[in-house]
Amino acid sequence: MVSAGGGKFPEITDQIVDRYRDNYALSSDIVVTKEMVQKHVDLEFSLKEVLLSSSPEERSDVWAESYDRLYRELPWLAETSSIEKRSPDLQFGQFLRLIALGSRVIEIGSGPGFLARYLTENGRPCVATEITAERGAREDGDVAWHLTDGIHLDSFEPQSSYDVVLSTQVIEHFHPDDVQRHFEGAFALAKPGGSYIFTTPHLFLGPADLSRVLDLDRAHFMHLREYTHRELGETARRAGFSRIYAVYVPPAVVRKRLPFVLRSRLLYRFLSRLERLFARARPPRIVLRALMFHGDVFIMATK
Image (cartoon, rainbow, N blue to C red; front, top):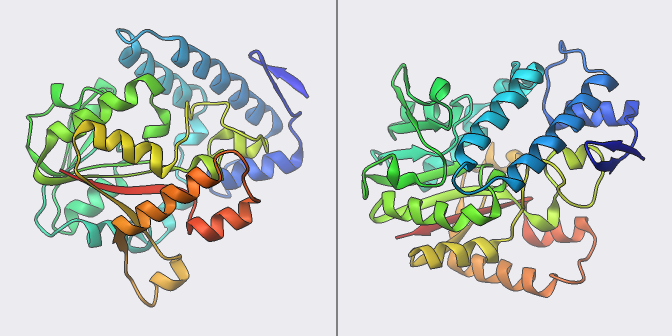
């Protein structure tokens, strides 16, 4: 074990480098060295400490500065990855089955904007958002980009102005103290009968940040917290959402032949009970994955 920014982590090996490349879906023409991985470990751990210790008043600025620094100092993370080469229908087609044609959508934390562009091109006009002024407010073809802090959503957008609020792999990056306010903002943006649809790594099947590469037992880096269906379903209810559905997306090999998505309140209750049962004594991950179907919390909360 070696120290990294105050943490104790494994020494970087060739095997860890291989897992790193796979985890970040880096294209084959990007050279990855042990030194690059170590730099990432050191930087992300230190940024996580800064984020966790930030005050509510400064947090949005600290969050934006931290992610700007991460991608500025680790430019290979922003390079074209193998993810871009995957079929967009297989990556994002499930959202077309959850979001009605013509719905007005806002995505929180859009990154490169692939999903926002896909939805817009498929009759679901989607506003993309980012947390920095440089990336947040601009025009990108048919996709409009707006600025947000990710938390106080109704301070940046009119209330009751969207049919769907959407986030994928974002909530885990928020300071845990801000998550309830984030859901309250999503509720405020949704029209009556509208929804907040979100995915985030499941606590029991993680960690899903850099910790996975190092084979650690929990998230130590910029996934500030990972969650369960039950936790986030209860958070959504406190924010005002009245109906909570778990979403099941079949494996890609099934979706190629039979594209469907299951949205079910009964499934949400089933998964919540499993999580309560396994909160203290968890079976092996292979058993958990079989029981929970996939590795993410995937919820549709309706106003």
